[in-house]
Length: 217
Ligand SMILES: C[S@@+](CC[C@H](N)C(=O)[O-])C[C@H]1O[C@@H](n2cnc3c(N)ncnc32)[C@H](O)[C@@H]1O
Image (cartoon, rainbow, N blue to C red; front, side, top):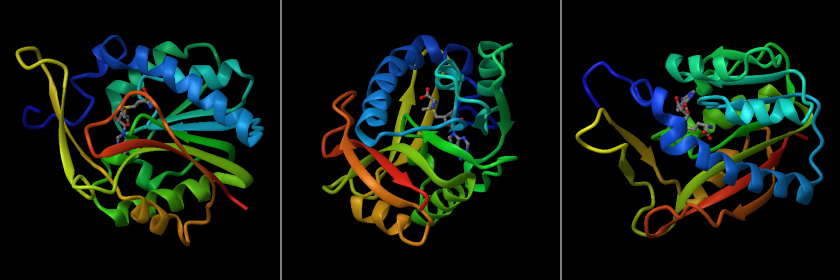
């Protein structure tokens, strides 16, 4: 990534075509499966690390209101705003580690490895606490993570996004162990309801992508 550029600032204009549109089809399928399996009911929602806002639009189309989209990248949020113009969705430029919604919501989603951008377990703990704080009592958090218990455990991986030769970014993500995720949930204010393996896309060898469903009691 060139000096001064932060992740997703270069990629924002091309994110949907490169990754986002395809990812959304999978995300919607696995999310709707979790909704049925866990009987999730929500009138309000927030999508954290919302990127270009495709999932925000989906939550609005399901009738949730308000729906907040939260991201730390101004250029990803600009795309999200354009995509959601006129549908009533609201957006916040925030880092998820210090997430502060104006009102608690019934559902919080955080998908496509967004939590793997947190490179140390203490930041994951902080984020999950912030998620619990952003939920109404009885509300649910649905998040996915790349998890590795083998040689990839705890490793920071560098991911090139888009092709070398065209403007592209190198992102750093960390594969957490299941124990680390469990430890981050302890004392977070969230109670785990389910962990489900995501079939596609397959992360690199030795890691799996998991969906977590947790509830604020
Ligand atoms: C892989 S993209 C996923 C976007 C969207 N959720 C999707 O599924 O298409 C990750 C997004 O998380 C955002 N992000 C990463 N770390 C963040 C943080 N600490 N706080 C807020 N947003 C963050 C990035 O700016 C980017 O838009």
